[in-house]
Image (tube, rainbow, N blue to C red; front, side, top):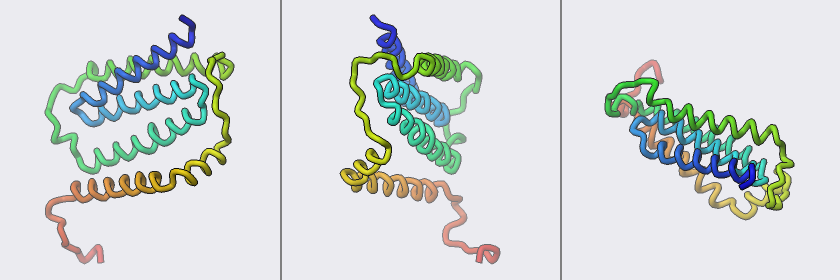
Length: 175
């Protein structure tokens, strides 16, 4: 077993463990943290397999923008108060710290070795401009549908999160 196979399997374990923890958590903020760790592990797998541009997109779009949207919705809806009460201790964060630490160590290892890691896969080379042109030429409709669904989800969350007494009332200060 080579060094890169070991890194691959470690990343796969981190990815699977953090995804299972994200789905099984009752506290939404904890689930979002595990999902972010899962996205970072996915990005490291992309980098390991010779796709650094996809790794960057994974971090920027999913771990960045989508997770900020999820956290915004959680804070807007104030769902944390509706969850089961339990002891909030440091023990609940141990799996997140361990999985995040393993991901960080693997990231440093991959960056230290550099892109000449000798993976047998031949990377598909395309400039970001060509990739963007291809996506918006061939898949423009799914991209628009996904953006519209995110917009509808945001509007629905704001509608559900509004205060009960503010239905249709306009105050003099607002007009």
